Amino acid sequence: MNRIQRLQDVLIESNLAALLVTDLLNVRYLVGFTGTAGAVLVTQDEAFFITDFRYQDQAANQVQDAQIRIHQSGVYQEVQAIIVDRNIKQVGIEADNLTVAQFQMVQETLSALVKTTSQIVEELRQVKDQSELDLIQKACEITDEAYQHILGFAKPGLTEIQIANELEAFLKNKGASGMSFTTIVASGARGALPHGVASEKQLAKGELVTLDFGCFYQGYASDMTRTFAIGTVDDQLRKIYDIVLEAQLRVIEHTKAGMTGREIDALARDYISEKGYGDYFGHSNGHGVGLAIHEAPAISTRSNDVMVENMVITDEPGIYLPGIGGVRIEDDLVIQKEGVHVINQSPKEFITI
Image (cartoon, rainbow, N blue to C red; front, side, top):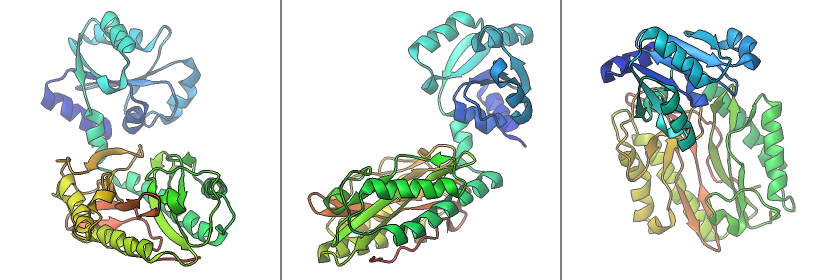
């Protein structure tokens, strides 16, 4: 069963006549189109990909499982033509992806009853097929290679920005199309910033350095964090490293299909709290990864998302001590029936350079 057919099953179950998909990641997921202008109208028994003249050849080469329509006056006008031709009485729209102005235009243009929907295609995207898992695996392999390269490159006196630039150049030379998010390089006291993007600060002896980075490979993301030391560090920093690592490993050891996001989050959070650092772990323990760097399921204290085989999530506990520094360790995991597969293979033992 292809992805369009899976969506059509959802439409039938939901008694929804059609869905207009405008989020470009969802478009790519459904029909394979990687351009920057296009939409998919899916009915219970047909699918139409709509774009303009600029993407006519690209659509012919990429689009699968949908009829291609090249519009002359606008996407919504072409959708309306299909609605009239197929006598469609109701159409869902991706409310999360439309501005107020776009929503008003949809209502003014379409004769069918417009129904707002949320996360329909995103829910399908949560469970990866083998082709998706293979691409995420490759993205993670490149990320692992980049980390090994940086361990040999980093030294006191280099700036965090120089580290980030070297990482990004290496990833792209290995086939990555780009970074999956802004590279985080946080050294010394800046390590207490969970999202401490690279700065002009120089690396120095006696500091921890946290690298949180990832890349896109053929559209799919990787996301990894490692923390290493430059020379000998304070005993407290070494202590929190060991605590974070144990918390991260507990998630790997106990996570499996059927668990909720909050149950997984608690595996790490409860251990860190037991060790007295609960107040210094203020973010969620993870999130889904795929076409987007942050997608469902959520791994947080509030998440009731249930894990299903072949979901891909991150496992990223951390401890952040203001004015002192911080530690985070992160892997990408594939949910399995009785456990997880850890995609990243970079070492996690305490490393000093």
